[in-house]
Image (tube, rainbow, N blue to C red; front, top):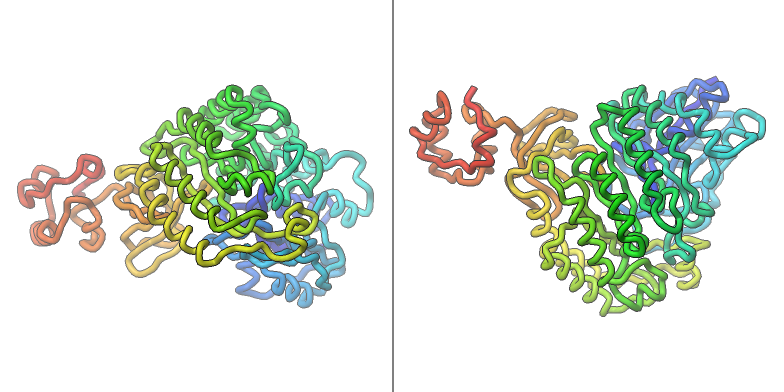
Length: 542
């Protein structure tokens, strides 16, 4: 029998699944269906939007956004699309998996999520979906734990890679655990709804990475956990477990191209600063450059921190930033190994006009301190039933001052992000393996595969999906301009050449009239142009 698995993409506090990311939801559902005897066809929602549904006996749809965001690699499925897919399918069993199975939400913040009541699916699964799906498809109860089941299907699950439209450029989210290690939780977060904090066995994780690697995966992110520093260490970091995890992955995936992580709790790190230093050293020894520790600070306003049980004060957070910078700011070809990312959230209980000023002033103090921050996410809260925020707001939408919110984002992007980007990715930084995702006129836009990969504008029209190496020449607010390397001065378009620092109108005219050049000496003799040293080493004259 045939099963159709439609990946509508997910975005949750501890799991991301918009291309090039591939979530555990899709892989595990694929593996369970295969284990139960189905021939599985995998399609992304973007593929479904552009064509008809293939024949199938079983329909499985994955979807749900509990964290608002902006997306480049794909657009998450809407509730309306999920309904339309169900109504157009003639499958004997229709299954919806993900937060959309429980909540009706759109892709923006500042709203209240409602319990899902739409019809069309026979099963709607979210928590513990793997065991429930197994019981539905294999018609028997799984005898042991959820992680035992996952371990039985990882080889079958890895077969999904061959059907992914981005393959081999797929970023696999690897589940390390679930839940949150804190005794009391942030008011807005849905991660505690998964239940008690639990860490997945190291050997199970390594087994899955090995299966994916053998099926062609080369990009991995250690996610699906609210705080990697608490992996197998709820009270304090388990240095041995994290060492075995990273070194085991390196052993079974020796030629991996990306090994990144996701969430880190700055409050936990501050409370365990010495042990956290040792954990970070292990990560830096084994990860690949450009990694980010996503830290949910949410607010620097003491009133908001107290009313929403947030993790850390500004003064303590500075200590965490100092520690992460001291170890993680080591550079490979100009790119830091791992840096903090900061999440700022508006619409929380206790928020006031002063909150916006406190948050902005705090961010500017970080900039002035000289500490590096890879990225800042600014979002509006979403209130989900069963979370404290929903109760605090009495089921009403979070209140966000739209004028102050827009002004905060504008000011932060201009006055913090732009100068910070210059520090994190100085001119001359080398970006390897940038993949072209979009072309507008004579500019190609692409990203590396990685956690919060930076958008790169290349002033040359390149083929879609091309892999190129680049050198950074300029900075936007949240993006970079980079030249493809090596730079052939005899062939490069003049429109692209003007992006090289030191080449003005006269130099452009000289180059246009006097090329081809034999070599650097010939170039300098004929044009009198002085190239920056960091560009000069990438220039060729073939």
